[in-house]
Image (cartoon, rainbow, N blue to C red; front, side, top):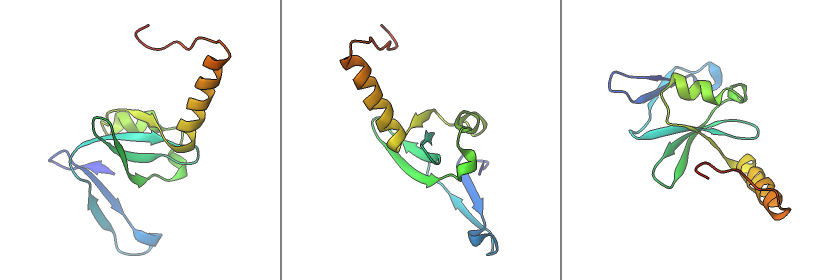
Length: 105
């Protein structure tokens, strides 16, 4: 993955590792890295919505912040089961009376 002279994200890959190389130019917009339980994703983000654009190989897991810095992406977000499990854990702590510190409080 790289950025072209216009600043768009460009993905160069070889299907099945032996076929001719292909180039995919992603649409303009804001992008973020989604941190998942098994693999990371590249997300196109709007004001209230994040759309998964592509799945990254499992070797990129735990390196989401570095990817965001290298490719100048807006943020790292939790996605999928990881996001749900963190929400359940937060709810459970609040239910049991443990105060959850939030930004701005």
